[in-house]
Image (cartoon, rainbow, N blue to C red; front, side):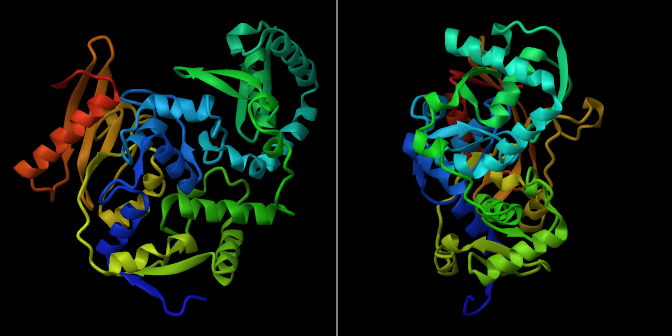
Amino acid sequence: MHESPITLTVRQARQFLLSKHGLLGEHRFAGKQGALAFARQVGCIQYDPIDVCGKNSELVLQSRVQGFTKTMLDELLYTDRALVDYPDKNLSIVPTEDWPYFERDREISRQNAERYPEMRTLTQQVRTHIEANGVVCSDDIRLDGEIEWWSPIHWSSGSKASRAALEHMYATGELVVHHKKGARKYYDIAERHIPAEILHTPEPFPDDFEHRKWRVLRRIGAIGLLWDRPSDAWLHIWDLKSPERNEIFRQLLLEEKIFPVAVEGIKCPLYCRSEDLPLVPEILKKPRLKPRCELIAPLDNLMWDRKLIKALFDFDYMWEIYTPAHKRKFGYYVLPLLCGETFAGRVEAVVDRKTKTLVVKNVWYENDTKQTQKLQTALDNCLKRFAKFNDCETIETA
């Protein structure tokens, strides 16, 4: 065990977390290889197809990776095949080398197909079509009827047969996403794009408990600091109940894969991965870290546990995209505004693609944020970078 407990002030905990994510100080990640390095560090970047001012995965990377462009992510996914679309925390992007770790989900999907005998016929038709014609989306295949079906990554009470078959084959790992056009996915046979030594590596864990243990450790690393409490950070770790989660934390502590971090003013201990311990002495030296001003994605790894963000940053954030318009406090697609070590407010920005204009609909500052000229300049520069990221030539304030 670690010789003595790690104790941090709230400010030091913030610095630790932001430094881990490459959101404080000089950029730790740059260019396409920086994007890949960050994806490998966190293990999983959540994907969402909605594109108001960039898709969630693109927004995550633009805030951390110097010079990031959307083309870089497409190349990593669909040219280099260093990353792959596959569910982890819901729909996600994960490093391709992690493919074997999700074999359990794929096997469950295969077994589940036995409950839907018509699925066997549908998948055979899809397979034949792809072998003859190549990459497909659901509109390319005409299969009659609808089907109700379930898998660990998808459930539908009435999907078109073609879409259901493609999604099922994606869930079982027979197909991968070849590319996307907007939100539409095009599929191809997995063995054409994933190296055989990865594709055929057997399940690494002997049982479900060890698998969930790996996933819990992965989520702790994806955020940086996390507690042993119910949290959205555990989404898509199937059948993870509190007693088992407690036991997983106990074992990870004994194995020194995680270490407790006491943060002043927070009753519940936080935990970090052993790989991140070198950040602690750096933070304790009271470094003068260069502040940055960044727009943070709504489903950013940093925001997965909103109660933790409230405890550490005193920032209460809710993604209101599914909140009825008349009940929203802010807006449809609002991004947290990180300035230095604090969340200064939130920004609603929309891309007008016809005019190549970034429309800043509103900026809401937190009550304790001092609206100085320095802050305004930092925000202006942030919005200029954000406009460039979205291929916008002008910025308009609504």
